[in-house]
Amino acid sequence: MDKKVVAAESEAIDWGGSGAEEGKILKKTKTLSKNVHTCLPNPLPDPVKCSLIKGDYLYFHYGCDGHDDRGWGCGYRTIQTMASWLCLNCFPLQGKHRSPPSLPEIQHALVAMGDKPGSFSRSREWIGTFEASLILDYFYDVPCKLVHIRGGGAELEHVAVEELHQHFEKHGSPVMMGGDRDNSSKGILGVCTGDKGSYLLVVDPHYYGCQLEKTELQRRGWVAWKRVSSLDQSSFYNLCMPQTAKKAT
Image (cartoon, rainbow, N blue to C red; front, top):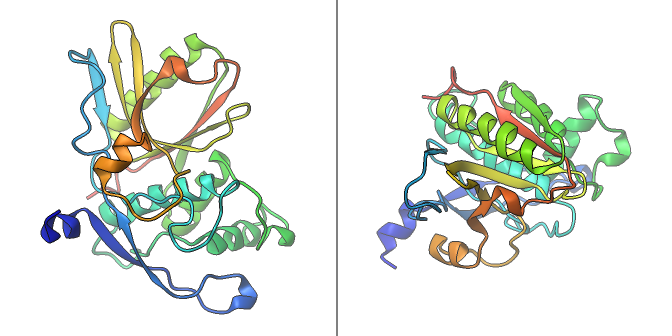
């Protein structure tokens, strides 16, 4: 691939950090893939309605900073993807611009605000949509709307889909999705509705390995359109939706 194309589709992150006693990762620079959903065709040839993320973001996934968080870090990685969107679209030239928080920084923040006990720092405990809303407010002063979707196809096809259409049309920011039986965190970047159902554009943080080009991530299914009906119909789901309409540039 042409080097200019690679440069346009990835970005270097300075992870910061210092003392090992605080559980922070060593200072390092890591290149992450950018806007990994682009060029992915719509799942329907003639959709009734299609709503997508607006703006740029970076794709965070298991191990992308050298920290092996397989089995527990998916929620953290989705938060980092959401935070990268805020960095690139809401505060690109302002003093509030900062890199997405590291895993230790997320844990320290949840302890500092009183949501978690001290033992949570340096642990391998997973987090969900509620913690995501706390973190985005803590680091970026961005409130989030939390939507609870009860299990069942009707709730998913109607309540969740309509909430997502409204969100992407008004705010355009990535959404975090999690549940109980289906407790794997997912980043949602869009929703497409047709006469026979809807699809969600999912960016999956569970990939672990070297950086891949977006075409390969798409080919392997790490970024893909998923039918709403393919979700666990016996699981409830929660959506964390950053309210960024007044902050985006």
